[in-house]
Image (cartoon, rainbow over all chains, first blue to last red; front, side):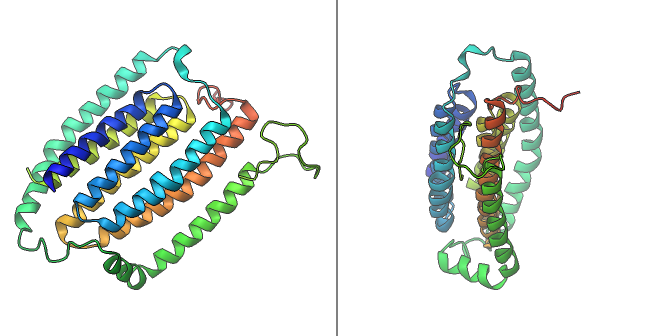
Length: 183
Length: 100
C-alpha cells in the first residue's frame, strides 16, 4: 500500500508537471491521461476500488475523450513561437512553493496525530466496495444524487445550446467555421 | 510517515501544480485540463481522509465531484468551442474584449 502509493504518486506528480510544461496541448492531454490513471492507482492503494474504476471510466475515458476530440477538432498549433512570460512563471511558481511550504508543516502533524488517534478505528470500515457506497448513496444521499442527475441534464442541454450555430436561418451547412456542430 | 500524510503531500502538490498551470498557460484547453488536475487533487485528499476516519462519506463526496466535473467539462468545452468560433483562437490573451 505504501510502496504503490509512493510509486504512483510520483508518476502522478511527474505527469502533472508534464501537463503544465509541455508546449503542445496534445502532449499535455496525453500527460493528463497518465496522471488520471496513476491517481486511479492511488485510489486503489487506498482501498477505494469503486472510485478507482469510476476514475478510469469517467475521467480517463469520457472526459479525456471529449477534451482530445475538441483539441483535434480545433487543430491548434503549439505555442513554441510565442515567447514565454518568464516573470509570470517565476511569480506563480514562487507563490506555489511558498504556499506548499507554509501549508505542509501545519497539516502534516495534524494528519499524523489523527492517524495515531484513530488507529483503533481504522480497519473497521475501509472497504470501498460498490455495495457499501451504493447503500450510502441510495439511503443517505438520495437528494444529492437526484440533484446531480439534474445537474448533468442541465449541463448536456447547455452544451448543446452553446455549440449550436448562432445564425437564425434554418439552412444547414452554410459556410462558417465548424458550422452546424451539435456538440 | 503514514500513507495518509503521503497522500496529503501528493494532493497539495498536484493542486499547486494545477494552480500554477491555470495562472501560466494561455491556451484555454490547457487551462481547462489544469482545472481538472486541481479537482483530482482535492479528490485524493477526500479519499485519504475518508480512509483515515474509517467511513465512506468522503468517497461519496468524490463521486459527486466526478459528476460535477463531467458536467463542467461538457459546458466548458462547449464554451471553448464557441469562443473559437468567434475569435478563431483559444488563446486567453486574444480574448480580451472586456479589458478596460
